[in-house]
Length: 519
Image 1 (cartoon, rainbow, N blue to C red):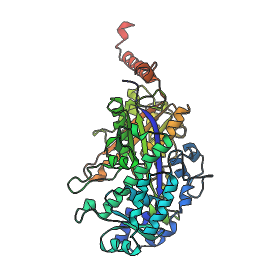
Image 2: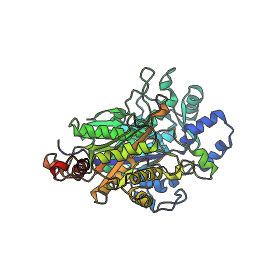
Image 3: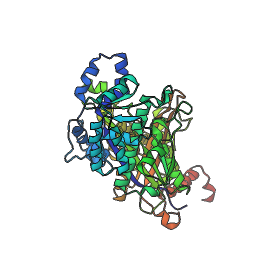
């Protein structure tokens, strides 16, 4: 084998969709059913952010690469009442797209003519998308199919044919039709959810080409790891989002499939990609995912109650390219993998032990040998007002507590450990999106700049949500600065982890008296 798989590039995108918060987020749609006259629904529109406010929001600027995680850590909490200076919708890793353009992208991603937009709205969107040089002319031509769609026709689809409405600035501008009369898996509601996921996935795949310099013709395999399900009544959730999105994004030489693991899906998919590359099965594998409408405004009631804007107004996406070792890019240590096994249990100490302490111990590394940990990078601006606390900080404290228990740091060093090895969360609460992978883009830059030597990506998931098991889930992997092993035919000139493991084993044997007779 020639070295370890490497991280060759990453992209991150957001679509700001305030109208979809009202009409598609499950917190709001459920409230419309059980309490349609609620004060929350009446107050909600007054708490929606403008596109400009969402762009200038510091966590969003970190997500697309215009600000660094350290910049967020240096910003006084809370973040929602501050604006990032010189904020831009265009970022180092991707972009922030407004809702109207995103609707246009959704129609371009629709290959079964289920999406219909009002004709003047469609014409306006086409002009905006064309100015971005994001899509090809024949793709933009899909928006010309709306020439006969006036307000009355769109309203009739919604009122008479069970179509899902699309609103922009509180005005009905389009609809998504059902794909089957009786199949609930192809209902208008599900088709809209899936098209949103596909479109946000496509946006990230295109930005991976634009911002990371990835040649789509050289990508062999694409793995989608979102939390939605694509299929009909005969194979609910069978897939395949990966090839569907890669087709629109122009990855013509790739095949692919979907990986599902709830919030831990991206970490599982990264291990799949790394294994495929390490085995030599494929040279270039992209792990990718779009976002989901269901979680829009998920904590909206708490935000509105406390006078905050609705902060969960973004559909997120990401793409990561994993390739064969190039001797330069950060390596994925396929031999340092944490696993939450079936027998691990759900106790926090057991979870952190299986994902963090155990794999490092097997590799002869201390928890302090990891410069940065990236667990569930939820934005505390969103979670703290909702009563969930600071999720990343809670993870870091558990890691530090375990380090204390193992005698690797003193109890008085916990706060310092959290500060040095942790980060402030910046990812939208889109389930799988925060789960470790938001840091891959910044991490790659830090490693190449010599600022970070070694980091751990941690994905965790709640399998019990599917009512099939009470099990928890999680996997982790270590990323390190390139050790040059590819140039040496796969054998690193010096492997610190192996040396430490050998020393540790020798010391254990000596302590057990196995070497005593030789002294």
